[in-house]
Image (cartoon, rainbow, N blue to C red; front, side, top):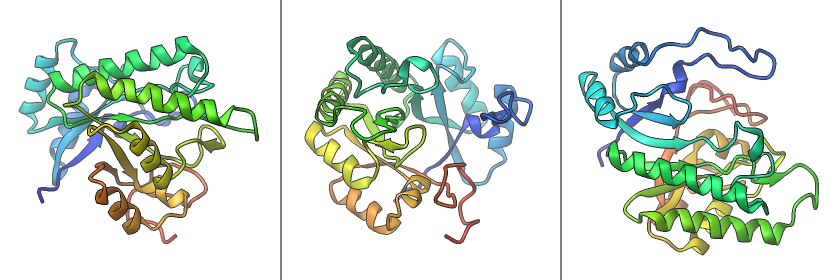
Length: 246
């Protein structure tokens, strides 16, 4: 198996959060980041967030630029969580317009994925969950999740869509909170190109056995991405792998 390793452009970003909304560092230009990535041993790809990452408007220019640094785009991640309009969920909300906006942004990600010859598109249902019991209609929430993501997957079945599970954050309870629920969702959607992204840090938060989760997703041929990071189980700071005994 040919192992491919990539990194997010935001790894070299300003790292803002609610205590320091302006960020802890000055942000870098795209070529500054690529120069650092080029020196990272074993790194062959970059993950692109849209619409937040500063990219050339012409995809061909980005391909050429990355080639100069011996890199390629590995994955596209459409951002469906930072705007307040997503607060009730992007894919499970009963607000038809919001779901349509989420579908549109994911389809744009799929189009860009094809143009950049990337491997897959990430779908993280960040706000698709709840904070209080019975705050949401569980049956309708799951119904809309299935219908919305199925429409996204049907848009181009040659492009892989990787669904990322997480137990909490930003909501206190997520609908797709662990590997089992992710596989249940993927199974009900029933498309060959819709699978899972196993985030190591998220699996740790959910008290999963990492090897078992990996094997379980792979058993169904649905392991499209693995995100390598870790934490102390209580939050998700994306710390470096192999640094914590948990």
